[in-house]
Structure formats: C-alpha cells, structure tokens
Image 1 (spheres, rainbow, N blue to C red):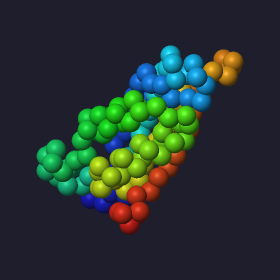
Image 2 (cartoon, rainbow, N blue to C red):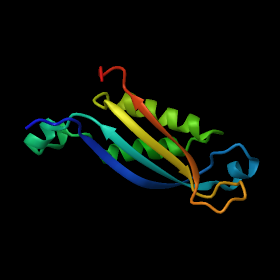
Image 3 (tube, one colour):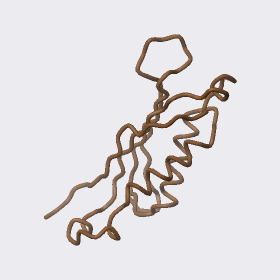
Image 4 (tube, rainbow, N blue to C red):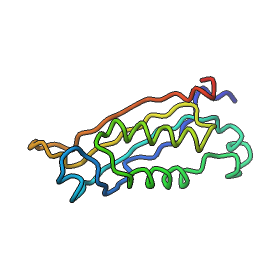
Length: 127
C-alpha cells in the first residue's frame, strides 16, 4: 500500500476567547471556531493500531485550547502562534492548514463569521 498523503482533521473546534482590536472584544470576548488539517505520515499507526505511533488529536486540541485563551489583536497572529506551537510540540507534522473564524465579528454585517486561513509547511520535516 502506498499513501500519497495522510491527514487528521479537527473541524470547527469551538471556543469563547478575547481576541480583537476593539476594546469591547477584549472585555466581553467572542465565539470562535478553529479547524485543522494536519498532514503527517501515519502509515505506522495504520499497521500497528498503537496510539504511540499516531498524532494524538486530544493533545492537539489541548494545545489549541491553551493558545486560544492567550489574547491577541489579530487572528493572523493567533494562527501563526498556533501553527508554530503545533510544529514545536509535534515534529512529525509535515504540513498544517489552519482556519480561525470569529463567529460574530463587530463589523455590522450579517454573516457566518470573519477569519483567516493559513497553510504552513514544517521546514524541519523536509516536506
């Protein structure tokens, strides 16, 4: 069996956090969703059925949760910080697509949210 690419997915993780430029955003907070596509080689996990050979998505969630509670002004900064922490904590990650959405942005628009998406490559994996 040949795997071209393998990923774990975490979709629409929900948080209440205090990110934003406006003072009221820092005071009352907002609801956010975070989605991740994490590419890593899980061939060994497929063969062994052993969590030691897998990227534990509960640990990934915990790291994201901690970072979501550290306020920043810009979602771009938050996405970069989450990405770097994931690469530092899980060196087997080859690539990461990360989406952070503010679900009720203070801009007077009727919308599902405003956010950022970034695709990062871990330069330590050689991908």
